[in-house]
Length: 442
Image 1 (cartoon, rainbow, N blue to C red):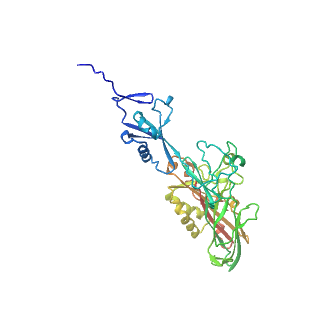
Image 2 (cartoon, rainbow, N blue to C red):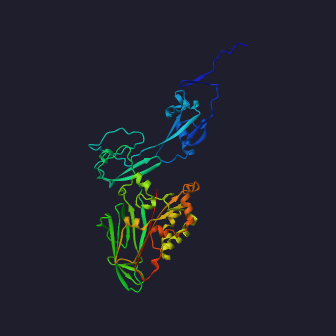
Image 3 (cartoon, rainbow, N blue to C red):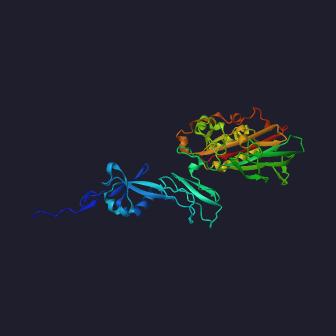
């Protein structure tokens, strides 16, 4: 029998020679972060099909994410360096690849696809990786009330609204920022339904009372009732906004607001945070030295396991605990019921809740209350709370706060700063009660 002189057919992938009769791996292992999956090469004939499968398997279907494939299986990959595999070379290199890393990259989309005119003195620069270039303002032909800008970091996108007359020619250097400076970004938060009850002494048929609420600049009024005008505050300690109700108290503990002639059971106000830094700005050192329970700023206040006062409870125990705490603080039945039912929809969004009541003297700095004639008793109850993931509780991150539930609700009188005797129940005194709160969204 003559000797077979035919040579096996070969294919070349870069510098690597793969014989046709040499079996190629039928699958490719895709890795994204800590997860790995195996997909058959028969389903990966095109780059587009591979991208679609990877998006589905790794749940990367949200908009604004680009999928990039990288591998170190090619001969050109020295010392394990990974090389991107684009769509144009996909079908050529796929037979020789066994492992692919999946990398995601945020895609910046201009929220206003309008013709743009660069500012006359705008700086030219080449954007580096991780930096999102800011578009110049739109042409004078289009005059929106604001320009929408998005800043994306990792998987979080923060939206900004810049007024059309804002000076966008300033660079960070002109603002005094230097390399290594810390930039603090705070989300808008709302002080929910602070309501003010005014109780005249027993036996008084009518009583004229003036109630003034002032705010620090970090807060602005978002709603008031009865509706009165919002004025700039003249107080040096609180140079923000203020409102004043002039009311006539009645024997049945209702009140008539004189400018609107509305009769109500209580006075209502609500405030939202503004995009202003804490005054004075928080420094990293001050935040480390000062416990969260020793400070209150509408923008930056938070709750933590180590603030010595916060307590973490499961949703199933939050309402009886709050009712007991509010009763200790002197709130009557209607006030306790209104407080809990107002915040209950927010509580129900979470499996566990971290909460703490703010000290009266700290809350007074953010929202000074001035009542004339001067009351015998003023009690201001303001709660901060946030949702806590169940995994954080099970992992012991909130171990101290979870254990504080056993301390009972009586301790909140000392935290808020109330006298040992409950003066709110003394009907012979002129009393003022306010309750409110804020959900911390960070």
